[in-house]
Length: 344
Image (tube, rainbow, N blue to C red; front, side):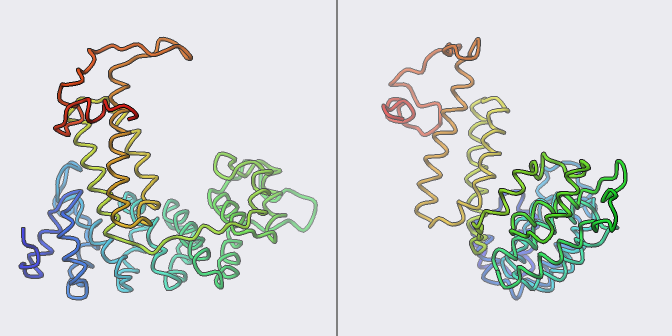
């Protein structure tokens, strides 16, 4: 479809119905007209499509319009969208959007700091939204070091005060998830001022070590001077990554590979998104080809071999592919010139 020939209304209509992985050309065209489309994108983000269209399955292409609108608005750093993101992060019914937007909101820069600081400190707000806000403002501090003292001071407000006398910092069996998120990010920021409070929380078992680590891990982070800067948000890289993943997902499904192998690859792929966005387009394309082949080979191996015991060699359970037969990866090449090539 020639999206650049569509009117703004028809372009929004196409975006709303684009499904999980829209055409790259559609996203590019929306970016080029972002100023003209902003009001419609704000409306698309504001309304929950699951309620509007009574959606019953995530296979419905109408289920993703708010996600695409939100990503475009983040890419444009639309300040008009910030109150909508705030409302989303406070709404348990839209928790899936928090997961999508939570790793990208910090690209707004420090203009988002007041809003998400207030959200984080609001004890009546949705806990998942609050904990994600902790990560957002911490990333803002990484990217804008001048604001680190402000962020640290804000995070410290989540911790209970030290008692004046020799009593416990909190009551018996008292636990607050936000203490843990504050302790984690304060240590990542190297804040030693809050160490006494956090040590006291460790002493009474009020720190979740599965999240923050034990006290020695906490102290080790205080000595770590590395600052994990984030690359500028590249929305086209995000959608290229989606296309890459959806192609592999379809391939694995079509070839009958077990779902566990597919999910393992998809989880791995999600963890690579930030690294992916930092590469130039040529590197992305080459990496995609290599990753697809490696993942496909690993998944196929799990279907064609079994291991009877740990440490024992695997045994083939399906017929071996002939070297002159079509490669099962679907490339159209002979197996010997594709996945069966020596060194692959």
